Image 1 (cartoon, one colour):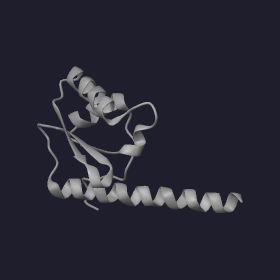
Image 2 (cartoon, rainbow, N blue to C red):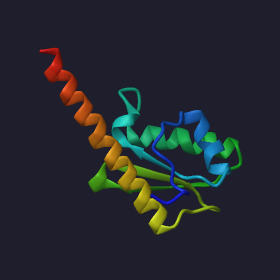
Image 3 (spheres, rainbow, N blue to C red):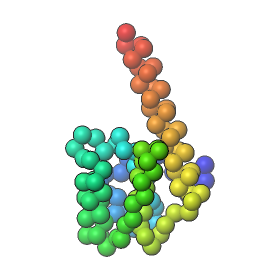
Image 4 (cartoon, rainbow, N blue to C red):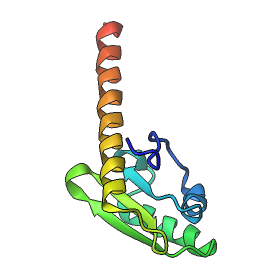
Length: 108
């Protein structure tokens, strides 16, 4: 993995603008939205928090992966960086699913 792409970590809604101001981008798994948000509401809230911080954001949905990219329009990631981020999140998603399956087997 490129050293500009970190291991996946969850950033709270209020902290996304700060990440974007530092030149980072966020790729969110849709399952991270939880029960309290639908994608449209989440996007609206992210855009509002970002605007309050002076960040102009863009969103790119990645429907086949159930992910959404959030980026600062003045610091867009490259295609390679997005591809690496998506791959890291897919790996994370599968690792978490594997741990859940193993946990259910041992709980029986």
